[in-house]
Image 1 (cartoon, rainbow, N blue to C red):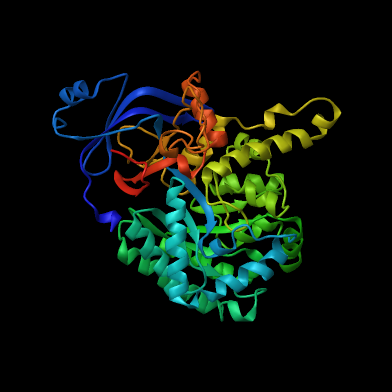
Image 2: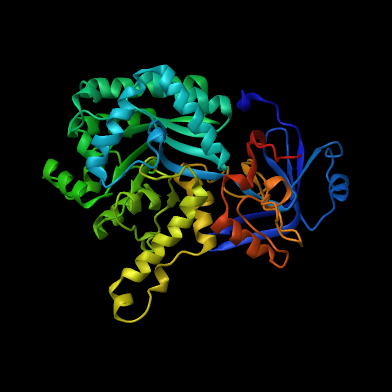
Length: 475
């Protein structure tokens, strides 16, 4: 069990990078990060020699050393919204939009998780897949099945991946074969999952429960209110969807005619809290944004899914400027990849679509203020996500006192004679990123940001424990 493997005091030596603020990346080309037996960063030094580091810090003389070659250490990614049971459907959305897609692909797949053998096969694969992309924390939607949801929590704990695991609730407007029998059963089964997750990880150091009404159209007002009461009584996180698609918003208006807005539906059910994660939030009104900010709720931006399902382009810059906390979500299988690095790229593309699509842009020049920078996208992928899932004091960057959630990135280099055999670097360790030797540290990171993938992620740590490695990893 990865989460229970003892941590050896270790010095991570070499280049490292992280976001210190929304628009500020720090890159250290020769650094040392000391991680103690509890997985906590004890010291950080820059431009140092490892032996000098050992001598300067009492008790570190015998510390293990892990060096990065042709690359750097980067904080683990945080996926603030994804659907674990939908993993087999990744890439299957065809010509559908949100509501049709649910009926065609999602509900049939999720309902099949009454089979624990099937759930185990898919969940173990998906957790491994997300870890391979450097995701150290993930907010997972499961299904309405209590046993399968608990199984997902078991798998995350065994692998050592931080996770919020939620049993999906829906008592209306979903197939009769796949819905909660009653409000009472939805609340009871959700509480059963909360109790189970807390029984296997009482401190919530790796796995925590999260209350999960699918979205307002699939829950009656009494069901939402019951879940809101449970969230308060259990002091639990909440995750749901909001304002993803214009047809969905129209449906919410029809189903909840006495509510001011989609967001107010959740607020009236006491589901809008500082521990609430709202996925998508593309079409929020000014009043809704104000309400989200007042309640301290957070937003998961899922740009790849929003494009795949033609839902729209979220105006992230405006939300950030208004002080709303935002992270990134892959939203598998509306999204086509479990990679937060891929999502960071799409966040940038979406911000440029917004910049090109404003009236000001059409009339004169681009609305450059709408565009996200590389640093900002990586911030959302790390520190922003940490704040969304309530871990901003523990992870998201490299600081003394934070826990060491990190990934080792290797980039490789192009030999002077080129790659005549198509190996692309030492044993292919460079992945898709080609470095020619003239790149600055900042340019190397940008090449990874825009061209990298899981082949560059050769090792992953959570709380100082190695939870994923490839054959290209050498300590």
